[in-house]
Structures are given as structure tokens and as C-alpha cells.
Image 1 (cartoon, rainbow, N blue to C red):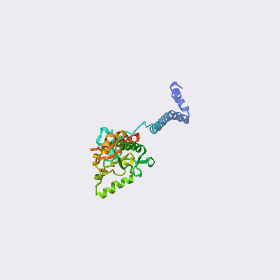
Image 2 (cartoon, helix red, strand yellow):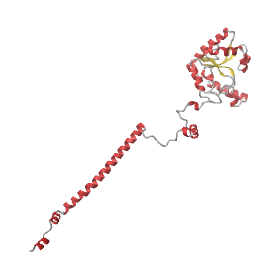
Image 3 (cartoon, rainbow, N blue to C red):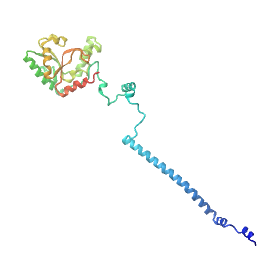
Image 4 (spheres, one colour):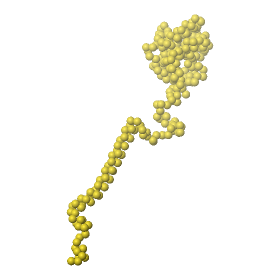
Length: 274
């Protein structure tokens, strides 16, 4: 046999090697090569998904505990849109806003709480006029000083409860056929009277009872003495002429501002006035 025939009948080494590998073994080898790549890709995807889930959970925890990611859909600051701010404040007041911007008054009168009954003492022998302890003590000193000069006060009204003021405002308004605004010029609505505080007192001149609760009280000796000396005892007129609350002139109405509580009661209330 010649060499050509021999070469045709003798398989190449590469062909023999391939034929000699069982089919099942060849298939398994190819699967390992391609499958490992696929599994690596899937593993990477699952790792990325896991990291994303962890990052999302951490961001939620940070927001709930530290507000690291505040909402960005809030309105612009009110300084940039005054009209919108004004409208918003009318419907949803800001608890942190300055109270001076939203005055709490009614027909020119400011709100006052009732004095505790345990702190009220008599300033008249019949018990008809009461003041808070600190105000009563100073009033007595003032009345004694006036009496030494021949001036005798006639206490007319001191502490009044909200129920008392209900009668003074609404019942008298009806009797006199006054509208609310007209009545408010001379009397505060219930809940808005200085008499609720126990620091205010209406005074007359014992020698001129016809001037009681009248602007003509300013012509009495008692009033002139009060003008000159009341500050010494920490009393002041609540409603002088042309007062900023628009209440009628009341020369007979005086209030005590001689300690921290009385001063805060009236002057913090005044800060609410427009």
C-alpha cells in the first residue's frame, strides 16, 4: 500500500481525539463553559439587587430618624410671595409666628382671665368691692394717703366675673337699645374686661357722687389727687382721652401695675393690639 492510500485511511490525530471523546462528555464540557458565564451574570444581578434593597432600606431609616431627605414640594418662603403668605396665614396660622401679627381683640377690648377667688380680698367694709391681694394692699395705702389730704375715694367696682360682665354688657345694651359697637365704647364684652383681672377699680369722689362713672369726674378733687399721686402707689388710668383701643375716656377707671404679674397682664395684652 502506497503512502497516499495509507494517509487516506489513517485518521488525523485531531479527528481521532474528537471521535474518541464520548458525546456525553463533550456536551458537559460545552455546558460548563457557557453555563458558568450565565451563572456569573445572574449572580452579579442578584448582588446588585441586594445592594439596592439595602441602600433603599437605609435611606428610609435615615429619613424617619433624622429627616435627611425633606420633602421638596413645599411652597416657596412667604417672603417671596406676600399675597400667598397672607392667604395661607388666614387659613392655617403658623404656631411659631409672632403673636403681634394676629391680635386677639374684640371691639377694641383685649382678653383677660378671671382672677382666682382665693386671691381676692375686700376693699370695702360691705365686701361689695374686691381686688387681688397685692392691688388691695396698695389701694389701701393710696386711700389712706388721700384721706390724710382730705380726699375720700368712693370705690364703685372692683373685680367682676365673666357672668357679671355678661349683665353689664348685654343686658344694659338691650335696655339702652345700643348696638354692640356703641356699647363696647363704654363697656367691655364678657371675657374682655380689665375688671376680670382683680387689678382694676372704678373710683368716685365721696364728696361728689353725682360725678360717678362720668367724664365730669375729672373735675373732682379726687381725680386731681389721683393724677398727681397715683403713680407713687403703682396705679394708672386705663383709658385716657384718645387711647389706642378706642374706648371712651374713663377718668374713673384705674388699674394696678405694681408687680410683675399685673404688669404682664396688661402690657402683654397691649402687645396684641393693632
